Image 1: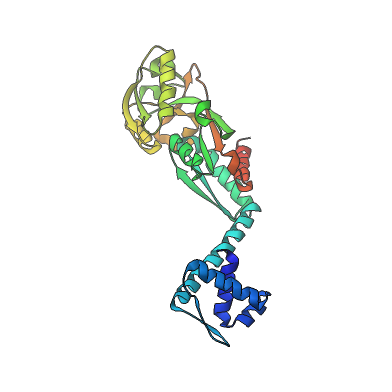
Image 2: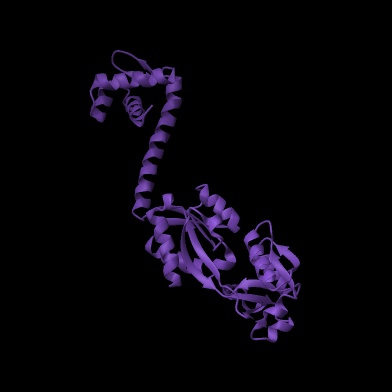
Length: 295
């Protein structure tokens, strides 16, 4: 069954006359009749009652007419949406993001992108890095904004670096560290830590483990949280300190003090990951907007 079979059937059903339907479609009457017969044969039931001068729908034909019209309309919409997306005028992209790492990147990127492409809807998904990669590879996401992970985890994906943030310590304004301009790492590692959930953010725990291993120590984890909101609340309540990117400062305001470490630690790198085989024009434009805002 092809779309032309549906178009031919709808024309015959609407005109109730094969000759008039053939004229509408600019095809010969015998060719049109043959296509309708082929359709009925494939379906295995009769769509039309035929007489010498007209045709009328069977009960099955009336049901099929409604469905055939819907299919044809959906095909038209699919073509129009794809054409609009190809020209950057419409469509939709799905973007996964890590809130704490994209708090500066995402708002500016969205503003710039939607100024140039107001017809494109950007669907946003707050996800852990592992879930972002799973959905990206499954085709459920078009772009993932996440921390730079080991190469083996990101193999096969296209990466665009968006930003580098200093590694800092987040403390309550009432914590003794809050009076310091910089926090000595040797002191920071002795404090109870508020961290992200190991199950949701294994890469965060790998960074912690590597940092503490270099100093011959083990992290004293006080609490684990599934998201940045819980982490901020726990630090503000004085339950411990947290190792965070410097960009978190514009997210917490006066609730926390964000202080640099001494000596400075490796920067936290944020990238836009995408699949090379799904790099549509709209996806490339969104990533370009995110890169531009950080330039």
